[in-house]
Image (cartoon, rainbow, N blue to C red; front, top):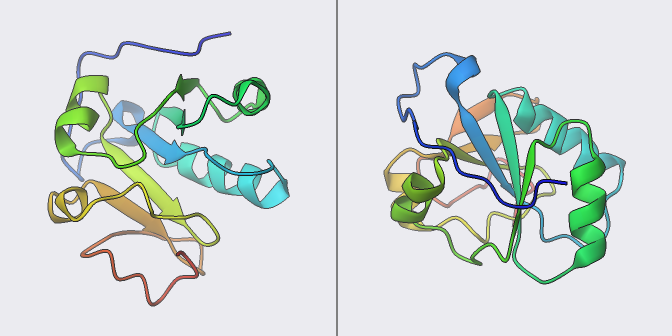
Length: 139
């Protein structure tokens, strides 16, 4: 199983084709249920590679996330707050948050850099203009 990865050619334009996008989602959740699997599948559909970051040393979560078809890589000991420099370092184009998925790892720096996408109630992905997600059920 792949727990860490190196990706060296990020592309940060919203207009780049989906085949070149690397997507990151926070995988620090209590249980992987059908809603989380659906969200990961939606997030994976926005790019060519999906990375799930697990901030805690949770071996079961890493194994379960690694076994999911839509997950390409699991990043163990991921930071609890992301920065643009960290996203660049690991080759991530966008962080995706969604309905029922906490945006707690996303900083205002990432939102200002337009590196955060939010999957809203109608299942469309929109750039996060700020961390105010009134139109979604995110925390």
